[in-house]
Length: 560
Image (cartoon, rainbow, N blue to C red):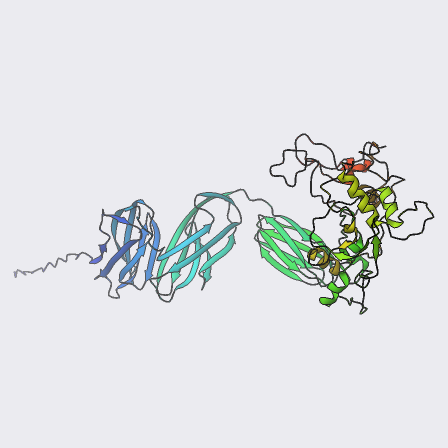
């Protein structure tokens, strides 16, 4: 029997450890550094023949930097002060990876670092804020470690890419997110394979339906003019405004302003759209043809103290001619009935027989004149006060002289000092060198050169006649202080305007307490206006103990 002997070769193989490493030369583990933190690292692998595919840096478990195709890192990160857990990672082409942990403490920087070198700045929403859906994301990205710049940006929501913008260096968009807590990250990628990101943790509250208001200011324009549409929206991602003239405008989800210049009356409809539907609002811009009476939007009356047209605007013709403002839009040449061609033909005599001719004032400070009822009769005829008297216009100097002499002796009803005791001031006039603003306004707007005051008397009675449309019902003095009457039950133009739904305003310069402004006003704030002589004024003017504005009353009270 043959014995067979077998030799068994036992081959035992041992696994060789994978050689894939990340070597971090900066910063040192456990080091205290200042921001921005300089990261320098290299990666190698002997377990994947195709080598390292990319490298990255995690900060507190969030990817803060990514470099595709890189085998080394040399970049800086802006980090907040305090302890930071960072990890430098490499990935290879075979799906493997290795990492090195670098725990550091970031101290407060003593000087400016010049801003982030690679970073994403998120201005909306704020980190750890509570918002409503759709959530408005506004962010920008920059890099100085890649000369080719930022290639794209994106937004991760709960580790899933929810938004991507190729070629973008900034984001301004809305994301519809469900209610609850969300971990979102805004990230940028550069053309060199690098990346950086900023985490934004938010809590989304219960979503609400969109709201929208749409207004036009002004709501009525003349042809060729413009109006501004103002849209105010909430809980919307976009506002679209369309006009009946075919126009279309797109605004952000919050709304905004849009200038429009319709050629005909146009209704604009806005639609605000959001995650819970849409809502609409409309406004109309009325276009009035140029040249139409309806094109007049405002009528302004300037009620000054008693002055004659000749005293203020007698030299308006030469002023207009010097500026070539004599031809109107209808092609006709217009002039006013001034005194420029009457300077040598008009005169008055004083009581001593001296002839006083027209002359230009050398100052705006002159002695007072009286415009009272009796004195006004004497102005137009020196000695005849009958209703049938001829209008000679020869008593102005005579009245001014007598008033000055009476006041100089301590007479009543006088204001200031009196040095012109011959009355020559009654023949003085101003021109544009004194009244440049008035002359300009009188050349741009209508001026009545043949208008005569309703009453030959004080300012108050003339203003009463102006406010009620032409009558004082026989009053020639101050009805309250002189005649001791209560408020007047005379219908005013303001009642007519109210009944016609036409808006109006009265502008005043001083209060009854002589206050010129709200600041440092210790006296009465009640407006000093002759409108208060009318019973109808109590609808708008009445005492308010709180000092705040009050709504108009529904009906006037008081009366005479």
